[in-house]
Every structure is written in C-alpha cells, then in structure tokens.
Amino acid sequence: MPLVFLKRSVYTAIKSISEPIYSSPIPSTTTTTTTTTASGRMQAWIIYYYGNNQQFTISDSVQLPIILSPNDVLIKVSASSINQIDIRRREGYGGKLINAYQSMKAILQLGGSKVDKLEFPIILGRDFCGEIIRKGPNVTKFNIGDKVYGALNVIRQGSFAQYCAAGEDEICIKPNNISDEEAAALPLVSLTSWYAIQKFSGFNEQNALGKRALVIGASGGVGHIATQLFKNLGMETTALCSADSFDYIRQIGAEDTVNYKQKDWLTELSQKPKYDIIFDTVGPRYYSFELMSPLLNQGGTFVTIITPVFRNVDKYGLVSGLSRTAYKAVKQTLYGLSNGVNYRWAAYSADGNVLSKIKTLVEQNKLKVKIDSQKFSFEQIPEAISYVENGSAKGKVVIKYSSVL
Ligand SMILES: NC(=O)c1ccc[n+]([C@@H]2O[C@H](COP(=O)([O-])OP(=O)(O)OC[C@H]3O[C@@H](n4cnc5c(N)ncnc54)[C@H](OP(=O)(O)O)[C@@H]3O)[C@@H](O)[C@H]2O)c1
Image 1 (cartoon, rainbow, N blue to C red):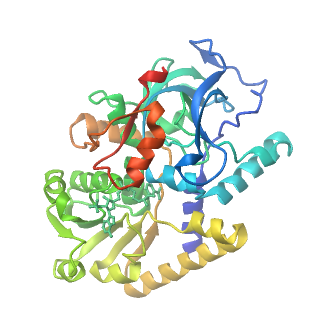
Image 2: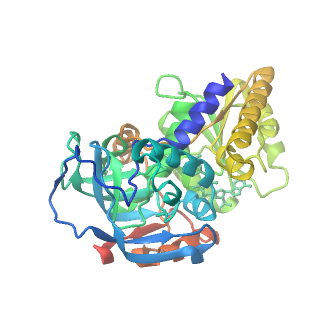
C-alpha cells in the first residue's frame, strides 16, 4: 500500500504525455493544423545552469515548441503566473529525476542521440493562459482560436515563452468571467488543491458535508484556493495563517483562524474539535505528521503537498533517493496506521477535467483567485520571480504578455 502510494506520487510528479524536445524533428506521421505561418522562432526566458535569478537570459531565437504527439496543441501565451516551483526548479529542484525520465524517453524515441543535451536550456513557468494556434491531428476537444488555460507538467518546457505546447487532456477553455491574467493565476494552485483534497484524500461532494478541515498556510497560493474548495464541499475550515490575513481568509470561507506566529498556536488548535483532514502547504520542518496527527479524528487524513521525492533524488541520486523516499512513505504510513489516521503526499498533475470543474466554480462566483496588486510584463519575469522570492507578494503574481504578442 505505501509503495503503491509512492509510485503514484512519483508518477504524478513527473507525468507527461510528450514534452517538446526543441531540437527534435516532427515525426513524419504527425500532421498539424494551423492558422499561422510561424517564423519557427520565439522569445523566451531560458536558463542554462541552475542557480539564482541571474541565470535568466532572454532570447528571441528559441525554436518554437514542436508538437510531437498528435494529441498536443501549440498555444500562444497571453499570461502566466509565478509559482514556488519556478523558483525551486531554477535552483535545480527535481533536476535529477526529470532528467532521468527525459533521458529514458529520448533513448526510446531518438535511439540515444542528444541525450546529454536534454536538461538545458530550460524554459521555466508552469501556468499559462493563451490561444490555440496549432493542433495535432488527433485533437478533437479544441479548435484553433480557442482561449485555454492550464498548468504544464514539470517535465514539459515552460510558459515563460511566447508559445508552449500541451496535451489536449491537460488544458481547458478559460473561465469566461475573468481576465487572462486571473485565469493564468489559477491552474497550478487549483489543481494542487483539488488533487490533494479529492484524489489523494478522497473528500468529495458525496462525503464531505459537515466535516472539519484545517489548512496550514491558508493565506498562500494553494492555501486560499483549498480553503474555498473546502467551503464549496460544505466543510468547516480553520485557517492557520498570520493575523494579517484573518479578515481575508474569513471572507473567502474559513470559519475559524489561528495565528501561527503566536507561541501557543498548537495549544489553541488542540482545544478545538478535531479535524477530518489537515491540509499542509508548509512542510515537516514546522508541521510534521507526528506533531499534527493528534489533532485528527480517528480515520482522519493528514495530506501534505511538501513531498521528499525530488529533494531526495537530488541529494542522494536516483536509487538511494527513491529508496529513502519509499522508506519514509512506509514509516509514516505505519505510524498513521498505528494511530488510526492516514498520511498522504499529494502533487498536482495537468488535468483538463479538473480545470473544467474549477472553471464552473469560477463562473458561478464560488472560487476567486487573489491577485497581487503589482503587475509585471513578459520582460519583467525575473523581477516578478524576485518579488515572490523576497516574500513581497500578497496574492498570486501574474505576468501579462501583450508586449511580445
Ligand atoms: N506538490 C505540489 O504539486 C505542489 C504544488 C504547488 C505548490 N507546492 C509547494 O507548496 C508550498 C506552498 O505553495 P504556495 O504556492 O501556496 O506558496 P505561497 O503562495 O508562497 O504561500 C506560502 C504561504 O505559507 C505561509 N506560511 C509561511 N510560513 C508559515 C508557517 N510557519 N505556518 C503557516 N503558514 C506559513 C505564508 O503565510 P503568511 O504570508 O501569512 O506568513 C504564505 O501565505 C510551496 O513550498 C510549493 O513549492 C507543491
């Protein structure tokens, strides 16, 4: 059971249909439909080495993503947003596992050539909103000209570029009542929240009504969406966040708030009725399973989106890293079993079906993404990343691409 769970986490973390490998040819079997005669080059922010923000270089001669799968579409990006994963990936997070996966795939697809060139250059950026300008021959759900939104799986080249490629099952028509920038702020944090709550923890419209949830980091990108999803499921939510966010977090649906910056936050939580789910967005350094599980009802679930898979493989290599991760999964699961509670790791996956449910909630005004007041252009992407990295953001930081379109 824990190994199945680990396999699922690893799979979810790196799942992708077929990422564009920029120097690869279009297979002769793939024909595409397009409205534009693209120059074949685009502007993109790229990194050649892992490190700090100075690694970013803007280039206007990056080859357009090539549609390798007949189910992929090419999207002209109009907006994107910054996520913590962009900062972690810039620093090298996940590099070893992603590179191992890409190398394996390249060996199968290209017979071993160019394998050493796969990792760099990297285009970061997961979230996007944009218009479909080209589609593979098997794409049936979308038409050229459709405005779509989505989050790219980590294995794909990213959206800090004029164009990105995505599978038709990974995207959705953008909600019709919000701007492109708002749409681009939603996908990764919504998918993460939905996956953690519904797919990994099993809470849904049929069984959640009246249950209690604790959200750790409720004011953050993921936390504020999770708080609203719990509200929409009819659950009673306590938000653990700084006092600055109390008013906002109550407005969006939390019944109760606790300030993590005060010394006795754990005592305060211990005096409240127990929870059916604890959703952790901060991690074991402050909120270990062992520390938090006494707050759970019997049969309750502790789900965390801070998983050790990538970090362990980065630090210890593929075999030892995965073994250590499996060991940790088994250990935590056994600890949970002996205490009558569940332990889960969760990760987002690009999923058009889930984005369609998010779209419905947004159009019904049941879900709203909080946007930071500071706006950035495509040319300012490294500045936008610094802004998030410095802790200045008070909501999702969005990027408008009009200047490069
Ligand atoms: N597994 C996945 O697929 C996945 C997907 C998305 C994100 N993530 C990870 O999840 C984490 C959160 O992402 P995010 O986008 O929500 O980040 P974010 O927007 O930067 O939010 C982080 C929040 O954490 C709060 N916080 C910081 N220290 C805290 C503490 N000790 N106790 C309680 N809250 C604390 C901050 O609240 P205050 O401002 O009130 O201090 C802030 O609102 C990141 O590490 C990210 O890499 C994982």
